[in-house]
Image (cartoon, rainbow, N blue to C red; front, side, top):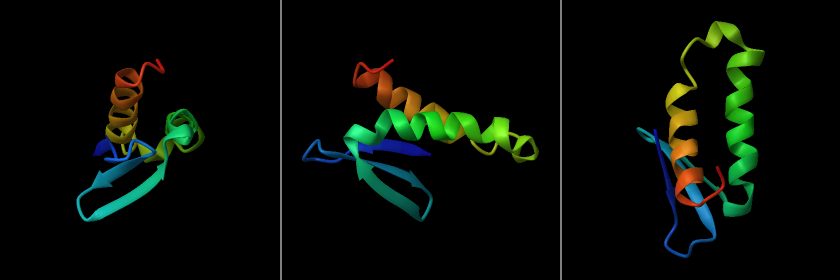
Length: 66
């Protein structure tokens, strides 16, 4: 999983293999909270969200949000 800021700095993109989606940068913390909640809400998911959480946390750290 990769999380990168778009060239214009107004959005970020999550990408895993062929799948990707782009979101407004102001929603970054909201998406991190969402992905952190998923393993708690769906424990059978195991470690499916680990890479997404790590990518979003890295991007948040780089932007000074955590």
